[in-house]
Amino acid sequence: SNTSDLGKNVLAEVNLLTISFLMPLFDSMINLLVLLVVVGMLLTVNAAATLGILAFLATVYSTLNIYLRVKIRQKGASRLQANRKRFRAAHEALSSIKITRVMGAEPHFLNRYSKHSREYARLNIFAQVAGQMPHYLMETIVFGGLILFVVVALAKGGDVAEIVPLVSLYAFAGKRIMPALQNIYASITQLYYNQAILDRLYADLLSDEQPEASQDDGEQEPLPFKHHISLTNIHFRYPDGEKNVIDGLNLEIPKNAVIGFAGSTGSGQTTLVDILLGLHLPQEGQAAVDGRPITEKNLKAWRSKIGYVPQEIYLSDDTVCRNIAFGISDDRIDDDRVKQAARTAALDGFIRTLPQGYETVIGERGVRLSGGQRQRIGLARALYRNPEILVLDEATSSIDGATERAVLDAIRSASRARTVMMIAHRLNTLKDCDAIYVMEEGRFADRGTYDELMSWNEAFMKMARAEESGKDEGKNRKPI
Image 1 (cartoon, rainbow, N blue to C red):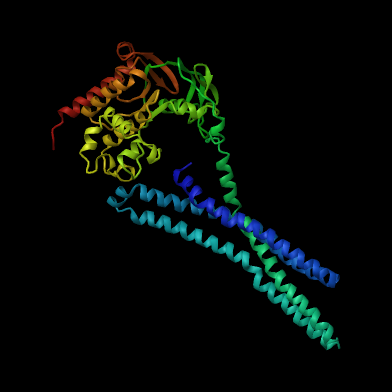
Image 2: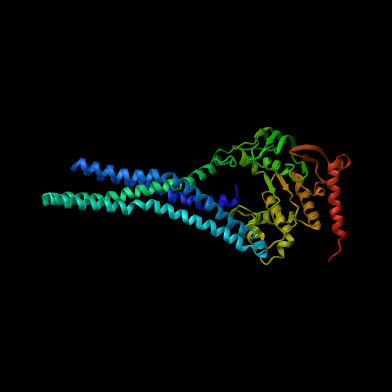
């Protein structure tokens, strides 16, 4: 799902579900109880008249309900889409604020947001009007009918002493019945209107993309790692995909080995790592640690052993220290471990130049840092937890040559007691790997050390030469 859709569902739709679905449901129950009590009282006074009035009211409200029910549900589904589109427009505008302002694209995003906001407001107004539509009409008819009854009864010579108490009783009852009946109708209208929200949230909760949703910390099983990680006949495709992204992979990674994955974009390296991280469960085959399959029962234990450095590092608008010790409360942060992780990631010297050192706030998504600095914070974050396994997904892609060498030296030092898996398009970062797997279309096309692949794998040689020629071109380029 789009992240703006997920944010909308969590922040807006859950609240709307409570206010506009659950509360009307409870209100309906309370008003139904009031209605039953008052009707029961009237039945003891004059059953025939009471049943006649109830039949009339039920006919009117049922007719309106039948006529509007389908339309209200359709409007509710349209409201959900309008809300999704306005959240997405706002999210995209704020996420691309720099390029939006440079290109003068503000009117485009403003128009998109305004269009969907107006539609959202219009649909909400329709739902409110549809829910209140019978209110004034029915009160006029009911109390007008009572007045007409009094006039006709008196004109026919009825006894005032009998008519007035009876009419007063029905007027009082009507004053209780009409609001209760109207509230029930309005609540049912809201239930129809907001059913799309319930369906959407229910679908999210049952989504296959959340395999760990049923985890319970108390039920987690340990998963010791002493010998090797293995993948056996792994097949994986994305829900909307037409073919397998990973197609029959078999792999064994010994403990403390340094393994590299290389290949052109779209070969499946990142998806393979996601399977190893437990972010995706394969449709066929299994991932195992020392022969024990990775399942929902031990997934948390498995992930606790992993330090992960993705291509795009997420940084919160907080201090350097809290970003390195990500997801840990202040009272549990170990400052010495933070500094050790920063030194290993070749980051400590830079941090000491900041105004408040490790307590410097770096801005939303690390806006005050360079790409290389952000990536090194990501590396320090992974090392802070002292993981048994280090997974690097293009972890040096935004780092300059000199810094890359320093970080690679640090990674080599940190790798001595760790299992390391590296994805890289810069093949020189894989030179120290014990084995490199070359991937093509979700399969392993070759395996060997860097030198071995350079001696026999033509595709690998071409990628390495293209990389070297790019470096030479950069060195020889004259400044403008």
